[in-house]
Length: 73
Image (tube, rainbow, N blue to C red):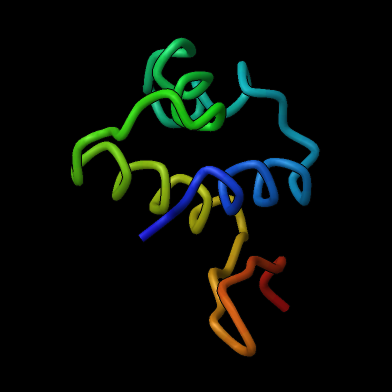
């Protein structure tokens, strides 16, 4: 499941601001800010929506030596 660190890393790879992620996912900006700041634990459906949004944008979540993200080849 996506973590706050993975969320920030995926946004960085896409050069997205939190506003961009909010718009692309239809998740409230405050929800994204609180999640990335470690101040909330969104429900599973919100986390899946974040993951799906990133994957549609070209992000691949990986788990080599540890969890990570990369742009799809």
